[in-house]
Structure formats: C-alpha cells, structure tokens
Length: 271
Length: 252
Ligand SMILES: Nc1ncnc2c1ncn2[C@@H]1O[C@H](COP(=O)(O)OP(=O)(O)O)[C@@H](O)[C@H]1O
Ligand SMILES: [Mg+2]
Image 1 (cartoon, rainbow over the protein chains, first blue to last red):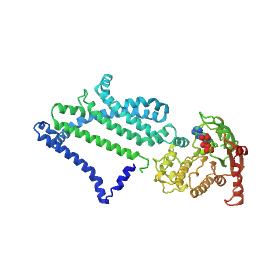
Image 2: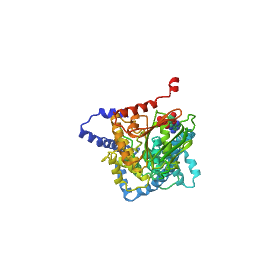
Image 3: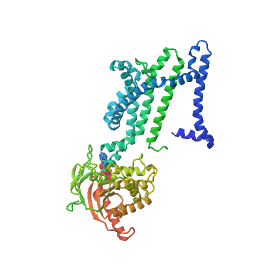
Image 4: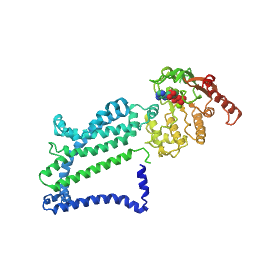
C-alpha cells in the first residue's frame, strides 16, 4: 500500500501528460504484445523449417477470425463453453458460499476443515480428471465438475474472509429495528460481504476459464477447447490462433465486468 | 397501554454470560413510568450495557424478568429502541438509506418524506445522499438517532450515546437530544458514567455499583440550570454515590 503510494507520488507528471499516460501506457503495452506477436509471425514465416506454422501470425489470424465471426463458428464454439463455465461456476457458488459462511461463523468448522481444505486446494483440478470421468456418466458432467472443483476454493475463502468485516452489533441493531432473518440476510449480510464474495467469484472465473480449455480436450465435440484441439489436428493454425484470441478477449471482458460489479458494491473507504 | 402497569418493570434481574463465572447483574429491580426519564449511572463494567440489552430483548437474562406494559420481554421489538455508544451505521448505505432501512424492516415502503422529516428533526437536513463514513462522530450519532426514531419507539434506551464525542459536540448533542425527547414524550433510560448526562437529560437516577452489578441508590433529580447551586449540589451527590464503597476502598 505505502509502496504504491510512494511510487505514484514520485512520478510527478503535468496534468495533461498524466491524462495521456493513464490511457497511453496500457495501450502501449497492448501494442508491444502485438509487436512481439507480429515479430514471431515474421520469424516463423521466414524460416523454412517452421513456415508451415505461418498461420499463427497476426494477419492470417485476424483474417480467419473475421471469417469465423461472420460464419458463426465463433459463436458455435463459445456457447457450449459458456454453458459449461456457467454451470460449473454456479455449482461452485451454490456450494462454496454456504461453506464459506460456515467457516467464517464457526470456529469449530474452521478448524475442522482447515487441513483437509488446504490439502485439496493444492491439487490441480486437472488431476481429478480420471476420477471425474469415472464418476460422471457424461463428458459434460465431468467437465462441469472439473470447473467447479477449480472455482470453489477462491469462493469459499473469499466468503469466509468477507464475514470477518461483519460487526456483530449490526445484527443487534437490525433485530432491534424489527428485522427478521431474511431482512438481516438481505440488508446486512449480503451487502456487507458482496465485494468479497464477488472478488472470490472473479478469481474463480479466472481459474475456471483456464481449466475450461484442457477440460474440453476430453471426449466432447464442442466448445473452445475442442475447437483448438480440432484446429491443431487439421493443421489450421490461423484458426487455432483465432480461438486463442477469442479466449483471451472473452476472459478479459468477463473479468472487466466483474471488476465493474465489485466497484459498484464496494463500501470500504478507498484510502 | 394499561394504566395499571409501570411502563417498564425490571424484576429481580440477575445475569451472567454463558461460560463465565462472574455475576454481571445481581437482583436488579426498578420500575419506570410512562414518559419518565431515567438515568442509570455507574462505573464502567458494572453491567449497564448488559442491563439495557436485556430490557431491549437482545440478551436473555439468567433469572428475573423485564416487562413492558405488563408483558414479559422475550424478543427485541421496534417499540423499544436501543441506541449504542457506537453509531453502528451501515457503511454501504448513504445517510437516507440508513434511516429508510429501519422503515423497510417494519414494512413501510414510501419512506422518502418520512426520512427527510427525521433528518431535519436531528439537524441533518440536506445530508440525505452523504456517505456515513464521511460524517463527523456527532453527525453519525444524529443519523443513528434518526434511525432509532424512524420506527416510532415508545421507549428509547441510550447506551452512553455521547461518550465517543469531543466535549463541545457532546454538550451540543446532549442539549438537542434533550429537546427531542421532551417533544416526543418518549420514555427514556439513559446509561452513562457521566453525571452531567444524567443531570441534564433525566429526572431520576439509579446508581449502580459493580462486582456484581447492583443498584445502590435511586434518587430524584430536580431540573436545574447548569452552573446553579442546585445543579452543583446534585452533581456532588451523584459523584459521591459513584465512589467505591468504604470496605472496597480500604482493601484496595
Ligand atoms: N457478550 C459478553 N460476553 C461475556 N462477558 C460480557 C459480555 N458483555 C459484557 N461482558 C462482561 O460483563 C461485565 C459488564 O459489562 P457491561 O454490561 O458492558 O458493563 P458497562 O456497560 O457498565 O461497562 C463486564 O465484566 C464485561 O466484561
Ligand atoms: Mg457499556
């Protein structure tokens, strides 16, 4: 905190320049990424041993992306993935928030679950793959389970952490003013913890989005992970790179949406 | 409601907190009439806050009972409102939101006019959209008072509502709360360790001593201007009653 403060104070830019810098520096970063991509593409295309992979370069990729957006290929790949992410995340939220509340409220439960949860949390969600395949009758079920298994931990711990900010006397005030259980839940617990829970969901979405692609290498014949695998098998590297781009952009947009939501419900003073 | 009962009756109230051996309250009994203004004074730790929370129905007593209008208190009710030392406002809501929330709990929907009226009443007109974390301590207590009054309580319990404030704000708010309570004809129990709070807001004072918390005196207070001889006399009397008992003083 103080480090950030010190560094932001040490860079004293004139006002208009500071304004330009605020937008300009992030854009410059994006431009640099693009430049590295373009340079890589150029190198691949000019090396006889790698020229087969020239589709990875920006131009072929963007051209192919345009075609895929127009013919619906992007939407066809995104929708099944979105459904799986949504289902996995929903399962993680429905199970994770109550567990987080229990950990936050009950010392017994917190101590009971501490070691098992720390152990389980450290297992890569993909390590559950064989078990998931054995347990679930459908590929979709297994994939949703893997996503949920990855997404549940940040939700549990963020919820438990958010409960720490609840002042026990708030409950007394609310009950004294005539609040029933649902009032207390809706008017005190939810708004008091919303920013933490949403932060947990944001982290969960990040890992879920990462787990999605390898999980979709499993049995299914739809979704972004399948599409990437399929593009590799058919040697269409421009299509492969286009899907990588789609994954990055959607993940970025979803994350941005959650950041906006978190800002809306935040109440702690930002100082 | 009924004229046969005291508004509030505290009967042989004893309490200890679960898992602890020390007795916090020991057979405390007193009655408060409708519209009466009672101060409960005592050193910190003698069980004043516990007593108020039992009266408010927020803590269940080990033995004894509290009745309001002749009926035993078993749960909190908006009709008997407790205002804490800390304002305990909800920081995710603005000033108006905090006051309106109380109305929502009791099922009142069109609260806007009522909220504006209450804020004007506590001297915070125009502060509707202000963030509660940016208010001063005194202003926060005013919002808490507006929130307490929003549900039209017939009893107001104040737990050291001014003790976190600086002396100037404290005197100012004390005077305004006095005027508000006077105009509402509300029954008041004010808990404090400050004898000036008691002298300026109450017409009767119960004095408590600690270990375990029990009542040692119950004195009528006369209205007297601050600085007058009568005020000084009553002040001296209350201060003397707050002194530790001789036996304790010797052993200390
Ligand atoms: N929730 C609680 N659990 C256990 N002990 C408590 C609790 N609240 C108060 N006490 C204890 O009860 C005694 C009286 O406290 P309190 O009623 O707050 O006194 P006062 O308001 O006069 O300072 C103190 O010894 C305090 O430590
Ligand atoms: Mg107290």
